[in-house]
Image 1 (tube, helix red, strand yellow):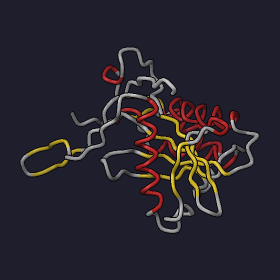
Image 2 (cartoon, rainbow, N blue to C red; image 1 turned 30 degrees about the horizontal axis):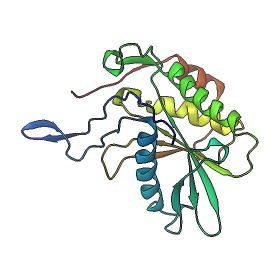
Image 3 (cartoon, one colour; image 1 turned 90 degrees about the vertical axis):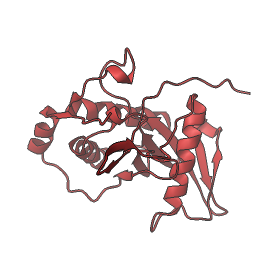
Image 4 (cartoon, rainbow, N blue to C red; image 1 turned 135 degrees about the horizontal axis):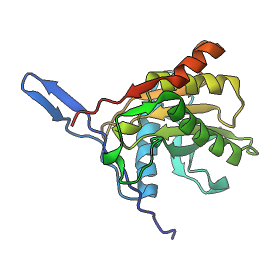
Amino acid sequence: MKKKHIKPTGEIKPHLITGYGSNVAPNRFIFPETKEDIEEKVANLFFRLLQDTHNSIINQDFELVSNEENDLDFAMKSKEEIVFLELTEIIPQQNMKGGYKNLPNDYNIGAQAQVILDLILKKSNKYAGIKSKIFLLMYITDDMSSPSMSCEKLVIDFLKKNEHSFVNIWFFIPILEDSGPMKILFPSSNPELIEKEVNELRTRNVRNISIK
């Protein structure tokens, strides 16, 4: 049996705003302690939500199973098809010394986009020789790691213009135990950015607003 690895995580705190103030929403997603258990829980929730997505190729005929072939994390299998699912966590661009609690609220959009693209390209290069369909699932374990919309635009634009090994790339925030927002980064219908737009976005800074 493989040894499980303890993995530090931050916190995702969805809040309910009422006339009496703000409170952490009940049933928020709780991350397990080990990398293996985190990925299994995130993958299972994503898979259930993906099956319920309109026009998804991963319908109710598929099942999610752990996978050891080619070191890919999971396989989504039906009688006719198999699609592999690889997971990777989006991490902040800043030095993680001291953990998530000490991260600054401000960050550069271009630098954060590059962190995400480096993760994608590293995974892509690892599985470049595999001919099977592979989905890449990018997720966060802390509010401070969530990319801004401008950051997402840069990532989406790069993926439209450059080759990689994935048929789909998703960004997922596991907010509640039974739900969370999913955004597809590739393929995308977004119009391509011109060089001036890319350069302008890369130089901008953004502030994450975290409700404590």
